[in-house]
Amino acid sequence: MLTLAIETSCDETSCGVVKDGREVLSNIISSQIEIHREYGGVVPEIASRKHIEGIDVIIQEALDAAKVGFKDIDFISVTQGPGLVGALLVGLSSAKAIAYGLDIPIVGVNHIEGHICANYIQHRDLEPPFTCLIVSGGHSYLIDVLDYQEYKLHGRTRDDAAGEAFDKVARALGLPYPGGPHIDQLALEGNGDAIDFPRVFLESDSYDFSFSGLKTAVLNYLNQMKQKDEEPNVADVAASFQKAVLDVMVEKSFRLAKENKRSKIVIAGGVAANKGLREMMEQRGKDENVDIFYPSMELCTDNAAMIGSAGYYNFINGKTSDFHMKVMPNLGFLD
Ligand code: KG4
Ligand code: ZN
Image (cartoon, rainbow, N blue to C red):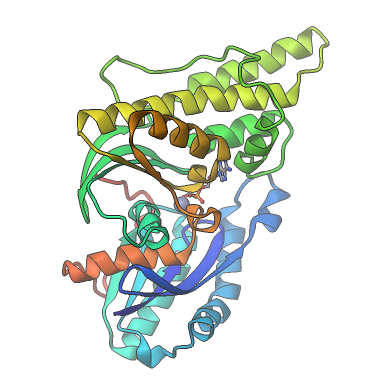
């Protein structure tokens, strides 16, 4: 089965062709980051306009790169939500038009499920069950994946998403948007034990996360330095902040894996690109005999191929949509 996948939930216009949910024939990603960087974040109206300008060309590029034509496509996979309403509308409208024109089914995909499925593309032999940590710019979840499309939610963020905390701290440090990769890079040069930022574990049995207290602690630290007229060591702040985030994420992931007797932990979402996270997970995995999986850098952040994979599992489970499907900007995961 070939699906043409479309992802426009935020600031990447992405289209790709995926075979049987696992094999990527093409995955074209056109990022608008340079445009939004000037504003320190994604400007929704600009994002929508850029999607409109680019989408037709990128769909054609995805088909060309996969060496297929519209007639070869069996169904369309498209991100339905969560995301920016105007941005999602561009992808969904294009998807509907193509599905209507070709008279083929259309499948609405939850973007967060897409992030999990990025791992099915990267690791062709990966099968559930596994523990999964999903950490992106808008979401943080800790779940048990019992089977394809069978999930049990154990934890979520009570305030900021993991990537959001990275981006806010980065902004306070004067780093460009999006800040996550910059913190990651700086942390390599800093000492993670230099500043004792709080590890917020919440109740002892909780799998939830809370990152806003940590963010505030970093901001307070920077303010105190400023009041004392001292220059903070930016690399040490980045490394110490990152270590405080990772300590909690890694500890909770392994605790859940142990509770559910899982021998695999999968990380997904933009923050799964974090080198420190990958390393800490792998180190602990070695100690505890747990295999760690994560997607390539390109598949961690938003891309259409992951939507094509999730679309395939929806499709084979009979979960197709129709032309009345609406975008769902606030769509949750397992709510
Ligand atoms: O999954 P994603 O592309 O978009 C959402 O669905 O939200 O995630 C984007 C987020 C941003 O907050 C970005 O700063 C963060 O992922 N991110 C990183 C890294 N690369 C991207 N955070 C930490 N370390 C990284 N290397
Ligand atoms: Zn995403």
